[in-house]
Length: 281
Length: 320
Ligand SMILES: Cc1ncc(C[n+]2csc(CCOP(=O)(O)OP(=O)(O)O)c2C)c(N)n1
Ligand SMILES: [Mg+2]
Image 1 (cartoon, rainbow over the protein chains, first blue to last red):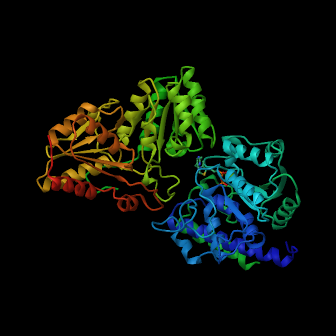
Image 2: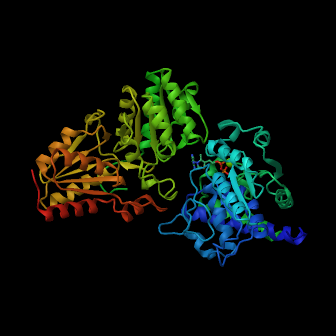
Image 3: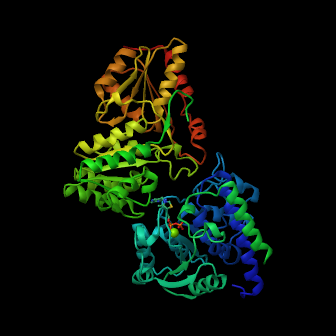
């Protein structure tokens, strides 16, 4: 990876604001979808797509590409926004999200959207899918890596832990998982719905290399990914403390915006905030 | 949704109120949920009876087995989630821990079929009726509207044994009335007719009624049956429909591979073969879109039911 410069951080920050604007617009346009978890994962996804992943928008199925797997499929607005900005398909297409006959389905569909690597929607399958990818890369002696983004609500799902055991059994150091630790799931706070803490200890007990970071700090995100790359013999999980709805003050930490779009007035406010942020950069 | 004289109402709201009613009357009724209880309105029960409500997080297989344990110890658990998670996602748990164990678990699910809408194919299950009716001992209910959803919950609580019930996310036209009553295993004739019988379930019952009205203008007399119990099938009523009208069209928001069309056709083929046509989702996944757009794109309309009747009439081989 190239050196982390001030310019790089500034560019990533700007890109993340652009993605957040897309997320708010896409979900507003169709009056459905999941803005909150898209915005909390936005900085992680930005760091991956605009600095880390070796992918080729001209050749989305290039066999040696790194794989990005979105396990919490409802957050696909951030994925679509990143793919469009990265050149996998036209940015204008984002406004077809969730509409009839669109390539941008309400939850990711494999084979339809250029750059989308996995079908998701039912929570809890992405990490297992990632284990399969990582095993295949290793069998073929390939250097490509697999990155999987999970929700914290997704830690409720038993299959997440089935995958965790399998990954450590096979010592998959070519697999890096991110947990978007925004503290909120569909209808409440994770610690009320199904307490997760001590989450770090759980993953350590499953023999993963565990890192705790601020999921909105690009230096920490990039440093954690570097450390995951250096780690041998074990998969790494990066527990990223995040804010659901991050970037728009009235959406932050609100359970409502898990699965609700902004109203017309709220859209204006949200865009004004994000544009203000852009202007100050 | 449907241009008709009907009121559009939420099955989920009726379900939520019915649960609270049941809770008041029977201290053994308990509810389990999986981070979707606001959607299902089963949270209403949780607010009224916090000690009899268990929020189990995004862990549906666990939820079903917990419900089974509660039932094994004498409770009457309602397990509530979206249809895709309360059927396909948890299939073998239901099979082993609920049906094979023969327990009194009531799996009540909203968000059935295409009308889930913009969430897309991952959430639009068009296979749950077939999956569930294939499990021995399972009773399968598909209420046509809000009031019937409440009656189904009530009847389910009063019956011993495993039950799966699916209904819609969208508001649906209210086509039944309280006088209709509700008995598990009994279909209901909503309109009499002699040339063809339209057998529907769920929100397609209203479309069958619309189709019957349209057919009446062409002097085709269509009987309409609300098949709100898919299993056990009301064989006497289906047999009578075959004998008296000589043609059957089924309509469902579900794949035709193994839904009510397949169930009815099999029964008719065995008992009294007459021509059958099926309106439903073909062997494909759904996609994102608004509920009404999807019903149109996938051919789940009154017009398609009328077309199917026309096809049968053209064949002219009615046998009574
Ligand atoms: C198996 C399953 N059960 C239920 C749902 C419905 N659902 C969609 S998102 C969600 C909450 C997700 O919470 P989390 O993983 O924390 O996502 P985030 O906060 O990052 O948006 C639920 C319950 C689902 N998608 N999959
Ligand atoms: Mg969360």
